[in-house]
Length: 294
Image (cartoon, rainbow, N blue to C red; front, top):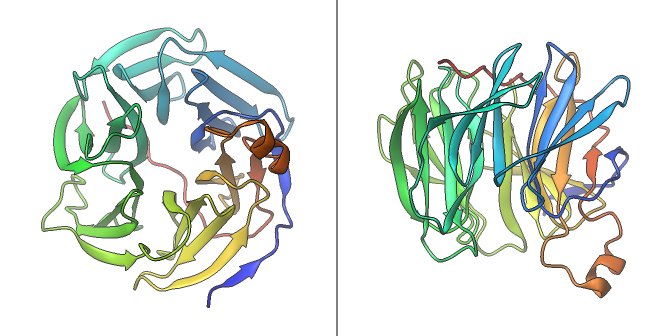
């Protein structure tokens, strides 16, 4: 049985997001970024000062990657856009899926400077989603027929990729070319979580190859060893935990987003911190996300 460690962290942001997702940390500015997907918002929090801004978006954004100190890449239901940080100006970069019923979901940067990003149906339609590789504006479809593709992360050396379909809860691993981030073989089962409660959601992989995964529906972040063994669970005071990220000047802290999506009034009353963003209050050996290479 996996040991559950009680929550000893703090709330980073008490403003509840309907669907908090896609957190990332920019060490050059000490800033945490994340999305409220359903609210069409990009949240910005300066970690040291606590200064907070919310940027309205014209689309359902879900994944952000740094390009340089002036620009970011955003994945959305309308494709990939380059965002000018100072002004919020958006420039179209690439298209993921032309289907109007599809939106972007999970994503993570590979050490090569390429992005893996997933799509899914707006109502989580069965097998409507896919995972794409994006390098310098070139989009390559990697895996299809996925319902809720999540859990994208990579080993420190860039030779292994991980992902999951949250509707199935099979965490998969796939060998990669570390120079490109493209698969060099077939995806195989890493951990079968199909018989467990909750859904495997967003993930990050630390400097030792440990995978930290948000467990949607269980109010938890699970830790997996490189051999697929689930080592421990950290409790989170919001049931629908969605995605973790390494934060802090040394990437030695772990944050996690959450959501109140699909909760009625009674469910929200029973889960009063749903949608808030948390610092787990644990020490980790994290890594900063690579920049996207244009």
